[in-house]
Image (cartoon, rainbow, N blue to C red; front, side, top):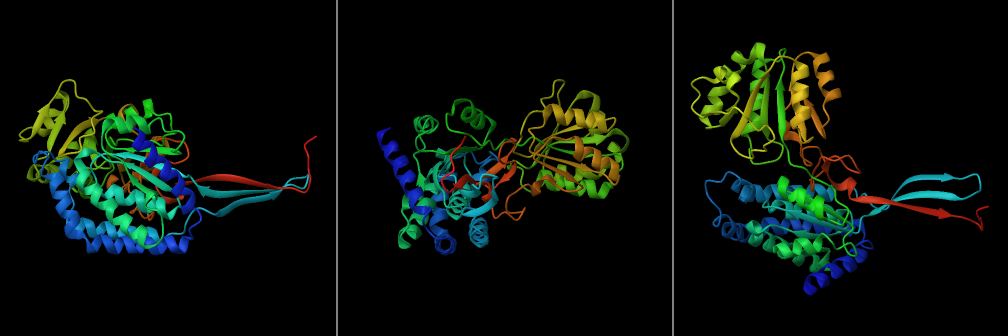
Length: 414
């Protein structure tokens, strides 16, 4: 672990140097990184192929690992968007004089060194690096072994641009994938200022339970869409299809559809053809199974586990008698990530948004919009489901903390 200690120490030293780098220079660096990403598309895809080829091709979660020319172009676009955003550090957020003449100023300053632990998804390497650079933070990245080759090449490209611009490469540090490295990172209070886990519930729980470093939790997403009795059927079908089918392997994808019993039959008749075409496996309790009779990918379970984040072409379906039953179900099984109601009744929508405790609550829209880029934030490190400091897309403006500067003229406290 002595080698890891050296890497962490270098990152900490580099973070202090980065704080003296002008936002204009960092903007230029980010634009250059975006260009380098596009220029080295083939190199990234070759490295990614090494990672993908080791995975089970039938595992739908491989989609999170896969890089394509289109996805690489999207990564470059996201980096350019981050470059256009103002640096959140160095901003005076509050200023006032006390009765004793002291001048109080509250400044936004970088966190310092941001640690990130994440699984698969090599795009996250670029997102975190770009967000941390823009906010004048160093980052220490602990990716998973599944994306080892992809992450290595990604950081090599970033380092090349940093060196060309006189910025120490250690501001973006990639750690080995060994489990022992994670255990060391969790106790590195001397070097890491904040730690952000992104991935499965198992990873997040492990980091939360064992870390001595302050943790910002980016939670797993068990997401619901509640189709209210006053829903416009065509609108509800389109929303549920998008929430489940557009990219099932991500955290903002739908896991459970709650349907008012009075409209369940007509709604399911419209929804099931698309689900059948995409071979979506539906899980349902025996008391609701009659509504899905004849559906070829049906699983009837007496003790259905509604706490599962499927991350694949699977979902649960539950019929409810009223709004309160839907709210009670969400309260019991939600991970407080993203929840949605489809209804033309404004009062019902207001009741839902008021009573659902989640980072993002939707009315008449897909949960798939929970994303830093979609929210105009450039990108995000993850979707925070906790309530301290940051909630929802954990993006650029949350990568700073406060520093109070007090200016006096000889005052002493009596």
